Image (cartoon, rainbow over all chains, first blue to last red; front, side, top):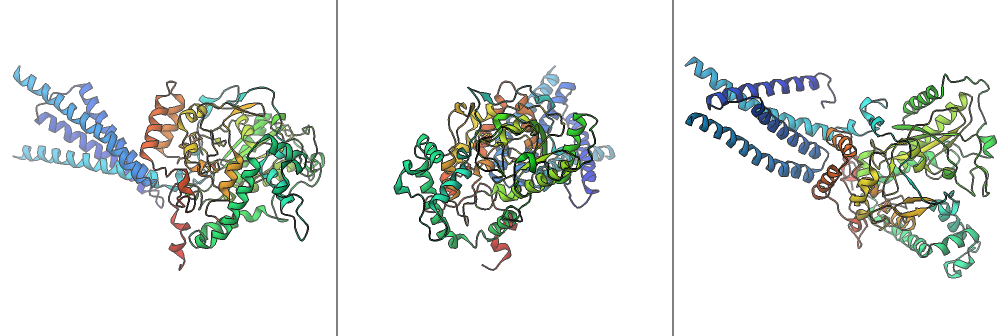
Length: 104
Length: 488
Ligand code: SF4
Ligand code: SF4
């Protein structure tokens, strides 16, 4: 990465770390405002989903960077579609939990 | 109010942070894919730690090749280059002299070794004659393709220059190994602290000379040619007793041109690199006070390289007949230096290449000549070992058919192999996980993706019209495209 600079590479990963933290902080507030109660395994599921999504996107773009456009796009599209379905299922599960809690 | 604004801000920042981190992942991925440093052997340094695969978990006591029957040493006539050389000398005599043999004379009129070979291999002679015809057409057609492949051809010729004629390096041995391998050996000889110290030093020196991989093997009799010895000529001989160990060296072809096989790539870039490394290693070992003899491409070998490299723990043999290493895949070219220096041999590895090849067959599907075996298992017994059969004669016909200035090779089977991929996180993940999976499911999953996601033109497409469309496996790098640099 940034082959002509040994400053930009580490800086990039620091910024990436900050962005992930900002995302998680925002997510905590979103979930609180939506009245969704979280515990350790629900958090694990949500974070796992996001990490997998990041990996799939990074993987697809790695192949695109290798000049394998078709492979890269399919790499994003096929597992990406699975991730979207998984994401919808996960959010429905979290929301259903919220309703149950509200009904009680 | 203030509180609500703060919450809203954190929530919006969170959304933006999520989106940006995904964009960052895309950028990091793209950069990893495009990075030239992730081409093994072309990284920032030959000592680069991330260049090497950790072989330790895959070390085995016995090499992965399978013995079947009594091992037999390879004879000169079984080597396609030597065989074709013998036949060509008979067919295309210099000057006004009548050719010593013409196809019309038939197989029986050929001298002993050649006659026996062609009798035992029906169709091989016809294939050679076909290759010659294709070669004539190739040279006649070159004008049509010359401009397009102008840089590629010049690049290849430049790489072949240290291989040709009197200035070739290293020089060919001029007399018996007992003499030539000891010529110039330093009278001062220091004893290594241990064979393991000696091996470690030798490998470090190999890397400093530009080798991507280096390993040490004991010389086994069955890997030594019979009936033809460089510096001596045609004669049967015992393996010289000072050929105790072989320092085996591997380098890849320049990766971008290799992906653009058959027409943009060349064999000579790796060959010339290997010759320099092995030639310098010959001198280095002699300076340490030990005998040495380099065995280098294209044809200056007294030993068969792939099994020697398997013994040296560099990799395993693939369906395509080529050594597959975890770092370079099938983009692996080999040379060796035999010596009597006391060295510690490396152990072979098992990363599951044969198991993968049983399912894969991509090289066989993509081979323009149909020269690679499609059988599920490697069952053909060649000189006492099981392997997938490669029809060298059909392969040679393709060298003479693709749109190059002369029979410069094809190498499509190197490019298409799923093991010949960059040293970046996506492929490293596959390399690390597949050999550790006893179920074979990872291999099946990877292979399904490989076949469905990647573009494989199909064997015939690599040939020039009317048989194909001069396709290459990957796109040629921009520095090889003539129209980017010249007025054509
Ligand atoms: S070099 Fe070409 S023709 Fe020869 S085996 Fe490989 S793919 Fe086939
Ligand atoms: S292309 Fe497939 S079958 Fe051929 S050598 Fe490579 S892994 Fe084996």
